[in-house]
Each structure stands twice: as structure tokens, then as C-alpha cells.
Amino acid sequence: MSLDLLDVALFTRVCATRNLSAAGREFGLSPAASSARMAQLERALGARLLHRTTRQITLTQDGETFLEHAVRLLESAEQAASSVGGASTRPEGLLRVAASASFARQHIVPLLAEFLRAHPGIRLDLRLSDRIIDMAANGIDVAVRIGPLRDSALVARKLAPSRLVLCAAPAYLAEHGTPHSPQELERHQCLVLEGTNPWSFKAAGGSVQRVRVSGRMQSDNGEALRDAALDAQGITMQSMWAVYRQLQGGALVQVLEGFPVALDSVVAAVYLNRHFLPPKTQAFIDFFAARFGPVPYWDPAP
Image (tube, rainbow, N blue to C red):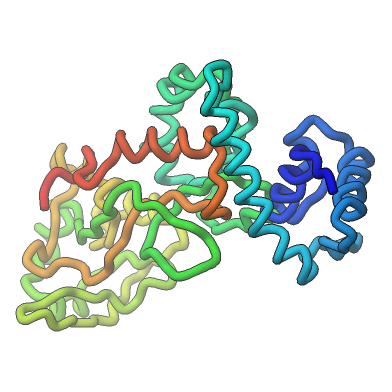
């Protein structure tokens, strides 16, 4: 039995994207050529690897078994190629990145020119949305997500902590007073991000205090709430990366600094395949991990 490595590589990308045409485009193949290569691989193995319908692609049991071996085969081939002098493992090709729109505009987009200069073989397709999109269905190589690290089928690498803080405009606090305990928030105008109520705080002895807050405005967009806070409309809970400039400049001030928010949020790069990470994806993750790190520039304080 003789296997074509291109067929094997195409198969692993089909498994990752769940889209035969999209996977084929990564190798410069037409949909017809991609389909023919998958049929060729199945004939060589004597097994059906994929269930294909007009709506979706799923793996057969044989396909799931072969995928593990296929990834190891490609890794071995890559290691063999890199062991000789003429081989190149330079990051290259089309890199599809999804990211939180708010975070990306402030902290990814300003660094992209430097990243692309460092890796001239990479072409970038950047998708910005504050909604979590299906990576496999959209052919995304890596996504930058904000929030707690959760168990999932995705592989995650922490790029930086994302500390949450309460803040308000000095004018709001001058008019309504400054709360000195989480319970006092109940009588304040709180600007609430959808799905985050109640607010939770770490207290003495490791206990957690939860306070159900209210106010005249809530939103599914953190930037809208930050802007409302800047306009002295209330107290908002924000990621430090979103408000550090306003805090440094005095347009916002922190509230309840002695009661840290009880939510371990991070900036993380997530991807689909633990065993086979293309050089272009590795380069993107390494670049931003180095630029952010365990003490990111937006949050030098512990």
C-alpha cells in the first residue's frame, strides 16, 4: 500500500475544517480534485474515511482511527524533511485568524505589520467578532479568545492574564459617592455586560461575595459600556486591557480595589489539533505570547 502525503495532509485539513472545498483551497486544489484525492486515499486504504452529505462531513470509525495515525505520519515526515540541510520549515501560506473585535482592534491589529514583516511568507485572513464562531466550519487556524479557560475539544494556550476591574468616571463618583463594599453596589447605577450578573468578588479568607447589580443600561458590547462609564453614567466591570489607557489618563478610576473580581479570565489562543500545528500557526501564537506574556503591558500591577 502506497500513500500520497498530499492526500493524507488534505484528509487532516478536511477533518479540521469539516469542509472539503475549503481544505482543498489551502493546497491549491479545485473541489473536484479534492474529492478525487479523498477517493484515492480511501481506495488505497480500503476503507471509508468520511461520510459526506450536502450539509456536512463527518468521520467514520475508520476515519477517526486513521486520523491519529495520519497526524503522526505527517509529523514524522516534517521531522524527516527538517533533518536535512535543504529543508524549509518557514511559516508560509494563508493563515485564518478569528479574534474578539474589541481586543483585536486595540492589541492585535497594531502589531500585525511587525508580525507580517517578520514572516513574509504568510498571508493573513483576519475575522473580527465578539461572538464565538465555529472554527472547523469556517476553516479558522487559530482564534484569540477572552474569558475563562474551559474544557473543550479545542487546544488552548494562554497568551496573557485578563484581569477584570470595576471603574467609573470621577464625575459619577462625585455625584453618587464611592462604594466601599460590594454590597453598596446595589444602590448604584451599574453598567452590566449581558450574561455577567451577578458580580462576584474575592473577600477575606478566600470566600466569594456575589452581588446582583442593576442599572439603566446593559449591553452585549463591552466598549459601549466603557463609553457610557466615561460619560459618567455608572460603574462598569471591564477587562484591564480595555480601560488601561483611560485609567492611566484619569478619565476613569478604579472602584473597590480591595475586592478583586472573582473570575480568572485570560487571553488565549485556541486551535483544533493538538498533534499537528502548522509553522504559520505556531509563528502567530509565539509572536503574540512574546508580546503579551504573564505581565502584559496593559496590566503591570499584580
